[in-house]
Image 1 (tube, rainbow, N blue to C red):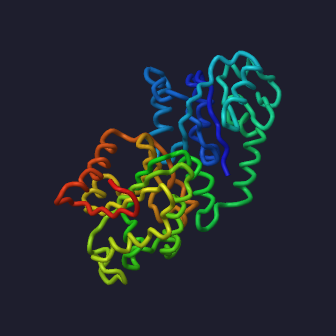
Image 2: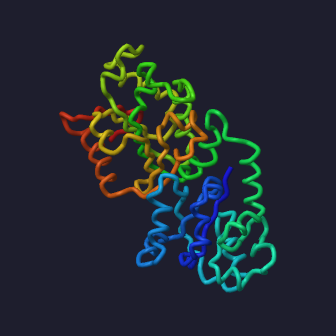
Image 3: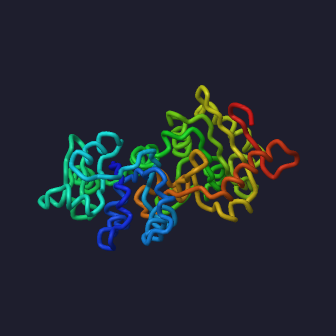
Length: 333
């Protein structure tokens, strides 16, 4: 369970005490940041830019965030707060310090409730006293994420991906998770069952707006030594997943590639959505098996180099010879 929050644009000048909320795991684990329009660009030249960039982009345990086309500014009265809450799909609005002091009563930690939404001062003591935070925090205190990570996907990853039309899923061990030797299915929580990987793949089929998904995975013979599935049979085995993954108007492609690509920067998993942003989930198979691991989920901005690399792989499938083997479950490249 999580709550969605946004910030008034002028909140960029928070002092050190108030800005600590954004590095608090008690807050960030429970929240998805609805990032205002052009928010990243507005950081340039700001004294706080290094802090905000580290929160949104660089930190491995950074805030989960989704872009918004809405800006929240010029709040001078309670009616401005309520108007902003009405127009935005969020649970909590963090106000700029002066706006909070000017608009809100000094009682109850500078909190204003409007219908089922709230606004408050940008300090942890205020957030802790909002009804939405109390509700979510109570849930976290009473119920840990399930053993197989259902809640991590449903409450954290899916809400971010659900509006995406195109996904690029880079997971080095996906093919070996599915068909490789037993040693590739072990971690500290025990054996990752292949049916759980298939179950996770099925989750992509259920994303409402998804039109195409590209899976990039390592394909090296040693991963399939002594395996029930022969190395040469892996492409056909992947094609067999069509019965689990396909739905109308969904294009799915697997790209099987050399180890050097993954060693160069994709040793852990990334899901690039709509080419502009990415989600880091440690390893694809750990989405279900390690739901309580502290730094296994974060988001960031896709770099130009990453966009070029992925597109070159897709384009190379039309050229022969290519280091990459392409498996199409539906549609054409």
